[in-house]
Image 1 (cartoon, rainbow, N blue to C red):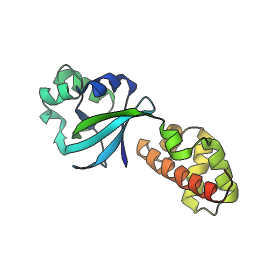
Image 2: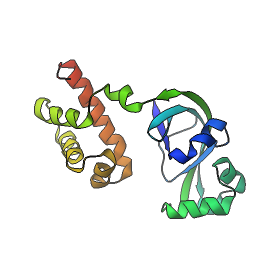
Image 3: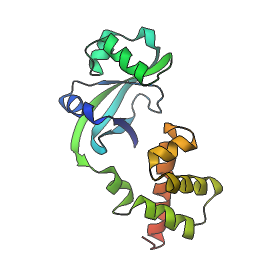
Image 4: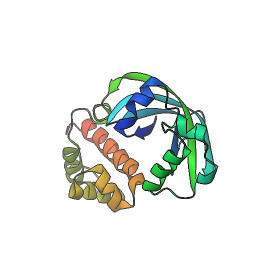
Length: 177
């Protein structure tokens, strides 16, 4: 399942149903997708994507701003500018269903430590060069976020997580974790 991540400050708006739109610089979501909704490092619900529309920032409306948790379009535009958004964005409309809080780490890696997964994988698994580079960068910088920046930007977080999940599964299969 895909993932949709929000800052912790949006948790109450999501849980109350007030926040039903998000504006993104980039997305891999499309209409009909379901995604886990993350807030503050925890999965708090699931979103069913109703629509994804590419728009110029100048075309955004007050309604979209309110559904995204802002008072008005001007407040939203200030936030988008602070975040360095370009001229075009994706407007993602979704329905939200709360779930019991899930720790995504446990869901994907059990009780294993990510550093332990990376070290054991480099030592014991037959990895391709890109996977080795991803794991070495993660170990060097100590976090998925910092490693992603070094590997090409925040979108690389998904690649790092994918490599760690694959390695974790292989280590479990081999009885090394």
